[in-house]
Amino acid sequence: MRPRISLALALLGLISAMTSAQAAGKDTPSIQQILKASKSSEWRALNPDNTLYMDLPDGRVVIELAPWWSPKHVANIKTLVREHYFDHTSIYRVQDNFVAQWGDPDSDNPKKAKSMGTAKTHLPPEYDRSYDTSMSFTALPDGDVYAPQVGFSHGFPTARDPKTHRTWIAHCYGTVGVARDVDPTSGNGNTLYAVIGQARRIDHNLAVAGRVVQGMPLLSSLPRGDDANIGVYAKPSQRTPILRVRLAADVPAAQREHLQVLRTDSATFARIVDAKRHRHDAFYRDPPGHASLCSLDVPVRVDPKFAH
Amino acid sequence: MRPRISLALALLGLISAMTSAQAAGKDTPSIQQILKASKSSEWRALNPDNTLYMDLPDGRVVIELAPWWSPKHVANIKTLVREHYFDHTSIYRVQDNFVAQWGDPDSDNPKKAKSMGTAKTHLPPEYDRSYDTSMSFTALPDGDVYAPQVGFSHGFPTARDPKTHRTWIAHCYGTVGVARDVDPTSGNGNTLYAVIGQARRIDHNLAVAGRVVQGMPLLSSLPRGDDANIGVYAKPSQRTPILRVRLAADVPAAQREHLQVLRTDSATFARIVDAKRHRHDAFYRDPPGHASLCSLDVPVRVDPKFAH
Image 1 (cartoon, each protein chain N blue to C red):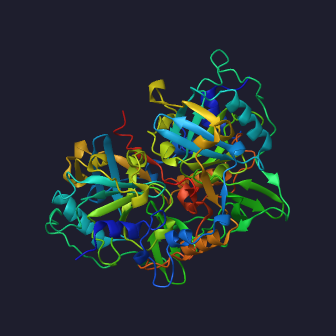
Image 2: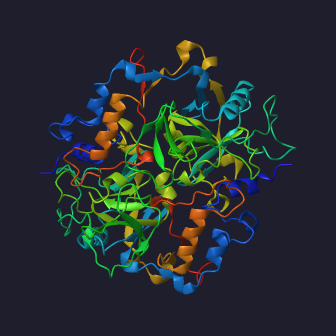
Image 3: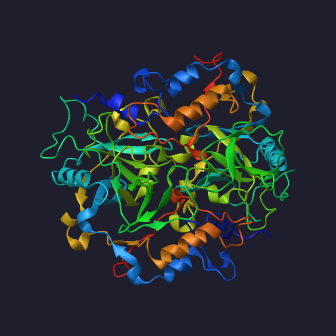
């Protein structure tokens, strides 16, 4: 008799599932077990000064900003957020297997565009930056199609070129970038996008503002826009309204999300990467032995002190 | 003054967009122009005997089957389709950044499961197959994290190992696979999934039935299921009903979709791959120079004889 469907499906979906202990090989722990055994010091709280809450009708998207990589863009975005620029804007473009994009749909129409307030309209490109050996970087061993080296740095999926000593955040699923025109200084943070599919081709061609740490399904499950116009919705009624965007620091502490992200330089993260590369579980006939950068999620949890 | 938003967005979304001629570099054609210059002989009509129409309330998903890779599974799926097994089943699992899965949600419950009719309940694994030099294979030049060689074969994204002479269809976006339990013979085609995110880790661990050639947004934009249960919807009311699944050959010829797929061994496809790798367009400051297997879509169109 076949196993019950819930076990069958659990085995099929090992990566993101809370797998039962039976699903792992006899002597190898499941991802769930590895996480359970983590130390509290291996988790870091999100910095409220670098965390955005984007409230949509169906829930909240939490974004961790990346000031180390794009300081000017992050600062400009914070100015926009604090001046309530994004409130009552919308998600107006969703292109299948690429991006969901939001902001003021009329931002390029001088007659209708929302005021940028004190934020800058142009910024120097921050598509990549220099690094040295002091940079925290947890390399992945399986190579990459696009970059000489890939790995994780402070929780972000990154790539780097040891010849040029340049590094950039990779456009993996959940990466939040700064939309721009052809003019390389025209990206100012008033228009942002989250990667919902394949987007490595635009690595180091746009500034990356951060990444979504919670709420991706709110973006990835949106109806797709007009494929003949790169996913822009034909009708304004199709857009998803953004109720408001706030910096977590501006939300009373007791009302914050209290999220923690697993440190990507932790032993637990290394064990998870190893488990995902080797898939020691009965379901796999041929474990992959490899894991691409964008196939690896960084675990997020509610601080146990606040979990119910 | 910034360019109008439609041009700006077009430049940002070059891959899937119908790009204007301005968007390409001066001497290099856009993807749209390359496609326009294709010869009719470079397009192949879908074989109605190997094409499924899955009708959902919001539209049709068209799936091209892959009998060369999984002959027994494809034959069994056709039996199920012809015996109307899938009619009134549902999409009951959507796991973010992984798969959308469908069939009979009670298929593992002997008291409730739909009859499999004359279809087989178990099949030998067809996770990969042998190949020789006669196999049509258009290699990609940029490597792969998971496999020694990747490329396209008869329109399918494939990988292969020249040491073992085994080849398999890669679990790229749109690949349709055969769900199973731990028992490697338990995948019989009554439960199928389409990749909506990152799934290369399950390459050559499940049989691939084919790929979605039209209608992916109908699957990729579905609400996600319960993340604590690998995306299975908690409530039956959340499921998307499947009205019916038919083989195109069983639909009167005049009512078929008349789709054509660009031959992946054509000169036009080679030009498109080159254009995507090198991104000769003003928007890119640093063209990627590379393209991963799963970042490359195979163009599909309506046969011009039937287009309105």
